[in-house]
Length: 120
Image 1: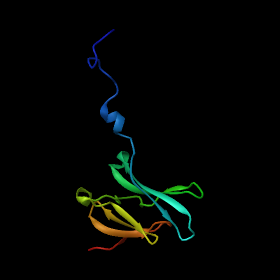
Image 2: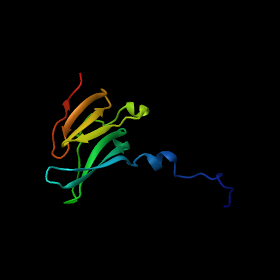
Image 3: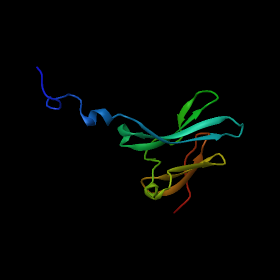
Image 4: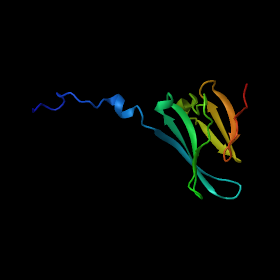
């Protein structure tokens, strides 16, 4: 059956297209203490209620891992509306804003660690 453009029903909805699409952003490259390069980026994960997770990829061995621990951690801030960022990596540490409390937190950039709160 022929129909005009836009006049047919489709099983494909906008929601079905984006409900499991991971959004990538804020890429950066940093060297660890041995001089090995690592690529970092944020992943917005719709299946985890839109939680943003910092991910690290080791250029040396091809391993990819989440820097952000599981749970309520969400590397996201409202300050980006004013030109700020969600995270910063310096001296082997990640400094980030946790969306739930908008506090500033720190953890290791290259080895698994629990975040430590820096602001009250």
